[in-house]
Image (cartoon, rainbow, N blue to C red; front, top):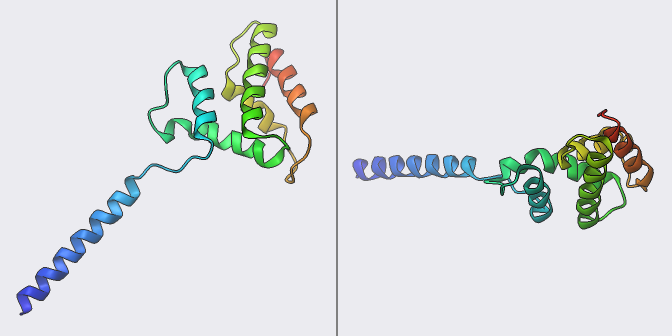
Length: 131
């Protein structure tokens, strides 16, 4: 009887340890994976292997989404357009991640607002070689 109880306790402890390891190994959930993957692919030339590849994009993308009145699809398209424009006009490679960081750097408010001017200013600085 004591052996059966101790065997059950050992088995329960092992299952608990396996469950916690599996939970720790799970990938973080990423909202707007499709849009973030598109930005990543255009920057790197290959598809993201995991959500960890998308983490830098996720941070800045969702900061902008939370602070600006813009949809995820429009933000993706605008980021691609502004990065290409800054690259062409500035004569250097401006990635989508660099553009997202430039916009995020200029957000100083917390409630959603119109951000058209912020996008234009960020693009201008990236075109001129600045952050």
